[in-house]
Image (cartoon, rainbow, N blue to C red; front, side):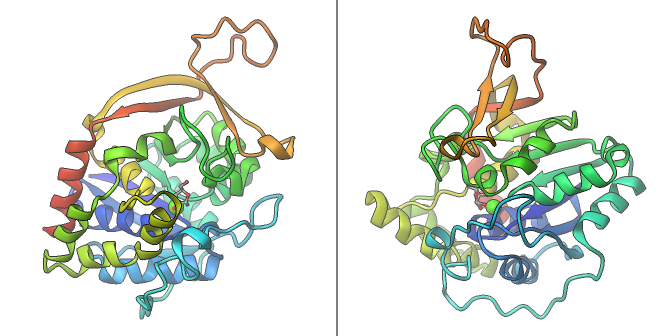
Length: 317
Ligand code: RIB
Ligand code: CA
């Protein structure tokens, strides 16, 4: 049985990804670790605890992690996910409690216990993972694989024209993670759009399923739906973290991916959080992009139809 640790800044799309993993019979969720991002750490923790409670699946231990990025002040996404990160629908009243151990220590302990078996699923900023790498790089070399929802992939940013949110919150941490030589798969924001998003019919189906975790998955994304309606008039809920979890659980949905050299911009404000993805097809002659070996497999095309079918099968089973 595959062993995964989910590192999350538990906003509303994270919640759907977590429920997918908790209900899956293909992975054992060894731990959930929380990090600041969509919302401050305390809310991300409450949201993740509530998600475990309603998830109707595994009940993994939860460990609390970093309450601020490595170098910057926290920038949240409450404008997208709601002030509580979960749609501001008064859904979050967990009775579960987090463990005492810090998330970074828990990650190192679990990886050390199961060398070369643990896969990290990073669906928030990379702060906890970067701290673990810096604290004990030898142990972290025993991580089997990192799946990261992050970067704008081969498309535009969602937080600035060039930066995706998870990287923008802590670009230095993302750079540490990318340069760790841990095998890595990147699910960029670009492959989480279009028909990977929930449409009105999908939402109505989930709400009518009679499964509380399916209803929770729609209700907690109310703020995201309103954000999309106001921003572009589309009645959709894009779920980047759920798409990333889909890649973790069902790698057959990845129709095209490229081994790339990825470089994180951290120096200039205008490009802070941009990840330049070099697939090797450019005749680059300038320094910085010549002869760099790939450091991540970047998803380019997904089978969204199969992804949504399998996600719904999990949510309403
Ligand atoms: O850019 C999308 C990512 O940022 C998702 O993980 C979302 O939850 C936010 O953390
Ligand atoms: Ca997230």
